Length: 231
Image (cartoon, rainbow, N blue to C red; front, side, top):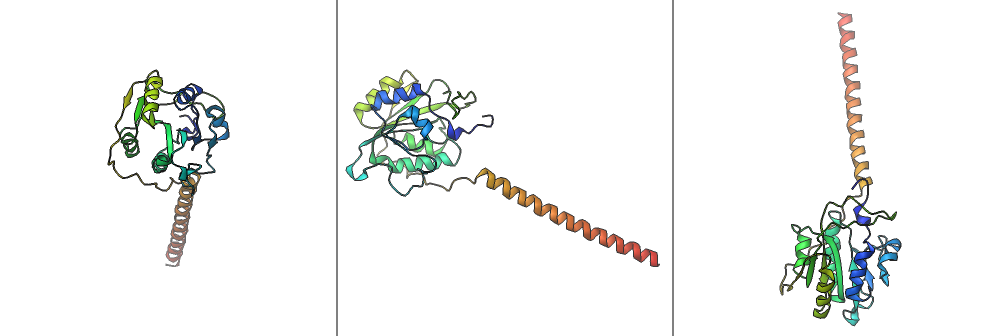
């Protein structure tokens, strides 16, 4: 997308309405902001400063009470970050009661396959979602399709199928009894500013070596000329 950050694309109200039609309410949104939550309306949400992927406390407010919280999640989509977001989500899933996850339909990735093997239903959106930017503009540069994963009990899955079939084809899934191990949470990709700074340091070092070599060549040339003059 032209100079816009897909990690900060907000879910349009149309889809949040569908999510609430299934869940009733959203207790938790682990990847959000104050602005995004004006639309989502979750009772609790985590911001980028909270760092839901690496926070040292459980996502669930009362994890010892069993799975009691509903959730909605539209995680960051950039490569490397989405892997960690899904890995942490699947780790927290046993402590959450029912919820819906919106992601790209990256069927070839390990994180997507891990979700497929654990979800109860999936809706393949029959159009490209026009996400909303922080300045409240619809993004026209979405080049990928999306899916909604559903996690939760049977009665809620039936409601998910009924509501989301208006958004795209819905397939009800049977979670694998022994799925592959959970994906690991890899370190985040280096910050762009850090990458640029490292590249600049490398360029500066090369230029310094070139300058030093030029000075040596010039000195050697001067010495040779002087020697010729003496002869």
